Amino acid sequence: MLNFSIQIIPIGVAQTIQNLIPFFVLILSYSFLKEKLPCLEVSNMIVSFGGVMLIIVISSYSKQSLSIGDISQGETTFFIGALFNVASAFSFALCNVVMRYLRSVHHSLVSSFQATSNFVFSLTGLLIYRLFINPNGFEYNFSAAEILLLLLTGFARTAS
Image (tube, rainbow, N blue to C red; front, side, top):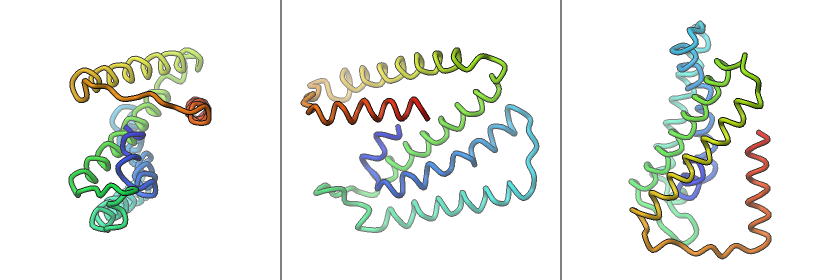
């Protein structure tokens, strides 16, 4: 979801939306782990959430943020990209809360299960895309440098 949204919305807005992860972690931790919610944290998170929403709304009306390369994006496309980015932030927060809940399980088992789940969900998304959205497929014409960058990105995501 994050990779898709970065292709639609500016990287600065995408990263700002990713800063909602602590907001979602706070809500999920309270809901599932029964952690306390100090008033100061709640007020800070409300202000942060409001700020991110303000940036999304302002950026959606900015002509500079609606053009990526030579492609002009409409408001609806921008909000779809922002929605995918918010969903990405939520899923990352959910992952963090689940990993905290599973802290008694060895980290290698959690990482293995997470990697397997990522593979299954990514493959499912690719199959849905190839079968229903774009049955004609798309070309795989990566250069050696692009393949190296893709591998580096995969390593960096795994390491984080």
